[in-house]
Amino acid sequence: MKTKTLKKNKVNVVTLGCSKNIVDSEVLMGQLKANKFDVEHESTTDDASIVIINTCGFIDNAKQESIDTILRYSEAKTAGLVDKVYVTGCLSERYKPDLEKEIPNIDGYFGTRELPRLLKTLKADYKHELVGERLLTTPHHYSYFKISEGCDRPCSFCAIPLMRGGHISRSIEDLVKEAKLLAKNGTKELMLIAQDLTYYGLDIYKKRNLSELLKHLSDVDGIEWIRLHYAFPAGFPMDVLDVMNERKNICKYLDMPLQHITDNMLASMRRGTTKKKTIDLVNEIRAKVPGIAIRTTLIAGYPGETKKDHEEMLEWIEQTRFERLGIFGYSHEENTSAFLLKDNVAAKVKQARTEAVMSLQQGVSFELNQKKIGKTYKVLFDKKEGDYFIGRTEFDSPEVDNEVLVKAADHFVRVGDFANVKITSAEDYDLFGDVLQK
Image (cartoon, rainbow, N blue to C red; front, side):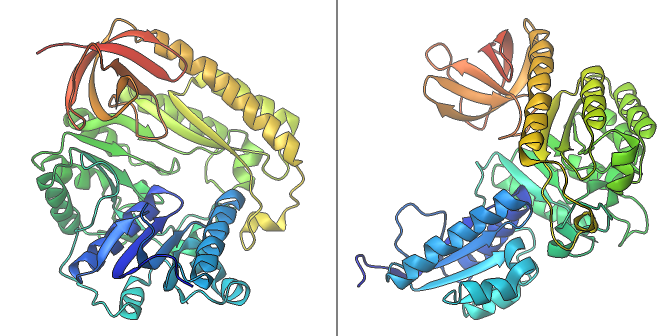
């Protein structure tokens, strides 16, 4: 028996996983709104008659969270708390037959490129004219900005091509149109995302065309920061760095997942590079763009990783001193080429190696932050929490990087605004400072 009144035309969209999924949910919500649906993102009122779950299928923990969420809403449907439940996204793309068998009372499972079919099921039209229009789930002053879909890289550990398909670039014309719409609605920062930014344009322009796209985007009025996420190291287009130097609104920030450093691990991972090439690339990037913040992501416990491999990684991290760094324990994913290898590093060893890397990086981050004391930075303020206004410098992306905290009792800033902040103290990952009056 139903315990509450459900709004028949209300849809609750639940998003799991990465920033690419956030964009997909925002596009879906924009389409639903244009079709006169009442739509919310992760509604707290629980009065929607329809729930759409946008799932992640990347690694074990993410898959389990997606499954748990599907089960929770499946049970809610059985209890009469919702009328319809649909599942989309990466997990649904990858495991649809298994999910249909194991959780059969879901009303429909859809893949990552089946938005028109999902809308048709909801008796909604896919509106082609809504290029770039979406309902933001982030604060309006920043937006994730997906420039391409899918991936053609052969990385042995990665299941993304299985879930997202091959690489497809969006046109510069469509992307500029979307950027202008976002800027008109208050977006000041674009965070460019893709499975691999550096592949942009190869399919439609027959060349790596990220630098050309950046020039066009940086000309959009109102866009004050453009940030680059997920660049592949092999074949990195160095002309991107020239544009970064030329245009003031392109952040001196580069997210480049390097995954490992030893030659045998890089070869087994099919990364198309070597230790020497990786070190040379990082050095060249830093030489061309002085002061750039490089964020990287690594994998611990990949099949065959030895204690020596791990120690070599630690030595490299200490020498390289990345401004930002994260690491994940290897996840053994079926249908990837690495799945043919024996997952022979114990879970507790993976965990210990992950913790060792992050402990080392914590010290590096602390030392780098201490050098910022007394300096002044342009800060974009994202939120107010407790006693502090919290923002970021151009060297930091939301959710994953350092934050700048300013005491609300001493200073007032508007969320979504920029201000110059003089750093007065620093911790491992947080900077504290005072707003300088204009």
